[in-house]
Image (cartoon, rainbow, N blue to C red; front, side, top):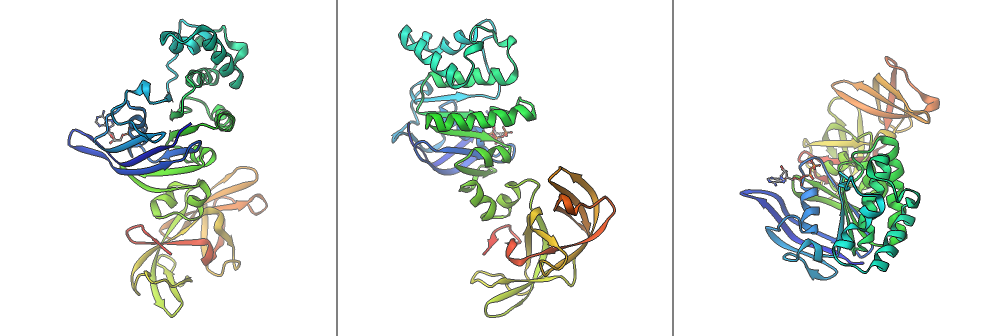
Length: 361
Ligand code: ATP
C-alpha cells in the first residue's frame, strides 16, 4: 500500500500544455476518482502516474519515493484498461499467470496468487475458459484479476467499464467497490461518468482543461461546489442556472432578482466579497430543490415541455421564459407535457455564482 503525491505536475505535448501544474495528495488506501469532460487530461495524469507518459514538470511520488524516472514495471502499480487486452489463445488461468511466469516468479507463488485473484473476483469456475467463451463482464474481471496477481501498491483504472452495457456497469461498479474494501489498497480511477465518480470515490478530483477545479468527498462536491463548473458537472440531472442581478444590499442581506422572471426576488446573506448592486450573477438550483408553489417563497410559473417518469420520481423539462428548467417531482405530483404549474425556490437551497463562475458565499 502507498500514498500517491502529485506536486506541480505539468504535461506538454510539443508546445501544447495539457496539464497545468496539478497538485493532488492521495492517501494510502484511498479510492480517488479523476473526473472531467473529454480532453481535460485525466487519462494523461493517470498515465503519468503509471509511467506510460513522461512528466514535463513537477514530481510524482508513490509511497514517498519520487517516481519521475522509474520504469513502469518498477513503480509497484498495476493498470486496468478500458479494452481488456486479454490474450485470446490463452485460458483465463494462463492470462492471469502470464506476467508472473514471464518474470520468473516461483511456480507455487504464482499458483497461490492466481487462485486468490480468481476467488476474490469469483471467476474460479471459469479458469479453464478462453476469453471468447466469456461475457464482457467476465472478461473485465479477468483483466482486473491480472492486476490483482501483481499485488501492486496502487491500482490504476482507465475507464474500465466503458465497454459494458448499463446493467453490467452497475454490477461491476459494485464489484470494484467491494474489491477496494477487501484489498484496502490505494486506487486511482479515471472516468467521465460522474455517477461512477460519485458512487466509487472516497474523494473526487474534478478536472477541466488541464486544471484541478476541486478535490473533495462526493457529497461535499455536490452540496458545496467551489464554482459553477463543478456544480454543473456533479449531479444528474444537472443543476439549473438562472440569470440574476443584485438589486439591493442592506447590512446583512442582498436581494437578487431573476432576470428572466421580472418580479421574482430572493434574499441571500451578504458577505464581504458580495458583488455590488447591478452586478450580474447566476443562481444555481438543483432539480430536487424546486418546491411546490408557495413553499419556497419565490415562485416561478413554468410550462412542462417533456416529462420523464422514472417510477419513484419524474423529471420535468419545463419552459420558463427563455430558460429551460429541469424540475424533479415526486411520483404523486407528476406533471404531463403541456401542464402549466408553479415552482418555488428556497433561498437557502440555492447557490450563487458570479459572472465568471466563481461561487459567491
Ligand atoms: P477522454 O475522456 O476523451 O479520454 P481525457 O480527459 O482522458 O479525455 P487526455 O486523453 O488526457 O484527456 O488528453 C488531454 C489532452 O491532451 C487532449 O487535448 C488531448 O488531445 C491531448 N493529448 C493526449 N495525448 C496526446 C498525444 N500523445 N499527443 C498530443 N496530444 C495529446
